[in-house]
Amino acid sequence: MEFIYQSGWGAFAVMLLLQIPFLVVFLWVINHKSGKGAGPSNTSAATVSRLKTGWLTLAIALFLVINLASIRFIPAIYSARAATSGVEPIDVKVEAQSWNYDMSAQEFVAGKPVRFNVVSLDTVHGFAVYHPDGRVLFTMMLVPGAGTSSLTYTFKDPGTYKIRCLEYCGMAHHEMNDEITVTAAAS
Ligand SMILES: [Cu+2]
Image 1 (tube, protein in one colour):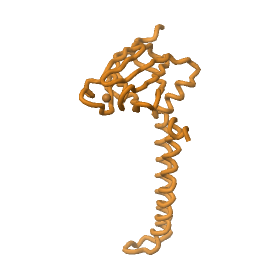
Image 2 (cartoon, rainbow, N blue to C red):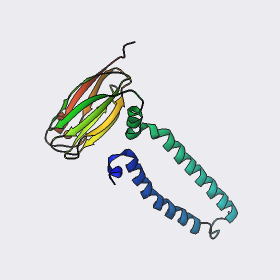
Image 3 (cartoon, rainbow, N blue to C red):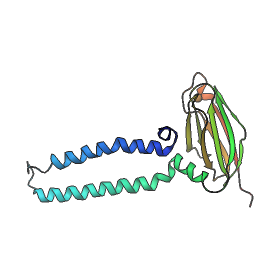
Image 4 (tube, rainbow, N blue to C red):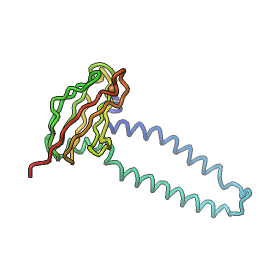
């Protein structure tokens, strides 16, 4: 059971379990409730059936292509890939506490995987890392008592990365931020 709560694949499996019954009902309805009579339309049942199969195939193909093409952007997936790339990640300990972060290191080198081991000491906090251009690279939700969450990330670009809490955590939540610096890899 722990697998379901503690890994990205667990969440993925639960999502599939929720979607499969929905898909079965959806397919049953469109197969039983449509194309029974021509109704106001003059299109023959055979043509409707052909069109329906075509559209469904297209929709399923699009669904698969978009999902497979975007799977590498899922944090659990790129974290797992970075963790298994063979390069030993640099471990960083992060303690989140209202309303700041205590980090064991804040300077990293581009291209080297960094494993953030993050824990909340008091209430629910977030740990979101922003690229220098403003994009959110990833965010972690930290639940007190749930232990340490780890995510491995490999920074590509040198620069100053902002860290912000994205879980409302009280009066000074808006001031809960920090920075890390990524320097270019020595060539
Ligand atoms: Cu916060």
